[in-house]
Image (cartoon, rainbow, N blue to C red):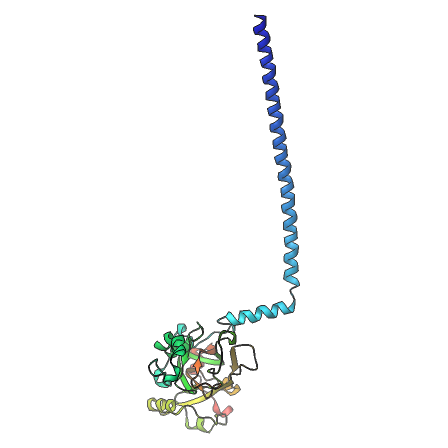
Length: 303
């Protein structure tokens, strides 16, 4: 009996000590976890503070050279950097007027010297060599409207009468092609005016240049009182600027007359030495003419 009683006491003591050790170990472990958590939180807070400082430095102390480099790279890959509404955009309702547009060569009509690599490079574009390509903002190498010669013209019907303020010609970025000889060089933009009075033909602002004869003949056949007014001239010069998107304002007299145009013609009078001109994009900027503006007569005598 005594032996059994003593044995039970020993077991109780041993168990109690074991439970105490386990409890102490558990508490120490929890304390360690808590301490490490506090330490990690402190480290995370310090890292976030450093990141905020670095962000502030980057936001306020980027060198001018870095800004210029970023701007150059964006200009190469950007499809539209002007932030101006384009009323000659196909997706806005504009479309090329076939009878006011010069002929487009097909793949079969290309001479033998354009075979091989050239045909393979432009095969997809040639199969659908439509002037609509010049009214599409998706500019990729070779995705342009190829004219039959170095000169040509493109007639565009705008979605509604527009008070034109600027015109723009795009080519592919120089860095993406081997040469730019097929880029337009001398460009004239014309606007069709209908129902003009005889006094208009004696106005001092009339251009000494003449629009494409085929376009004039066609316009007169529909309306004998129709004529074309020169809106702008553009010298597309890739040697003097880093931008492949070049824009010019219309002549001041176009703004002063307040005439709204619904049909415009882009005439390419020369390129940079290629046998054919490749027009990547043509844009027309301004604002939609209001109904009140359209009903107001143009006071030519005040010019």
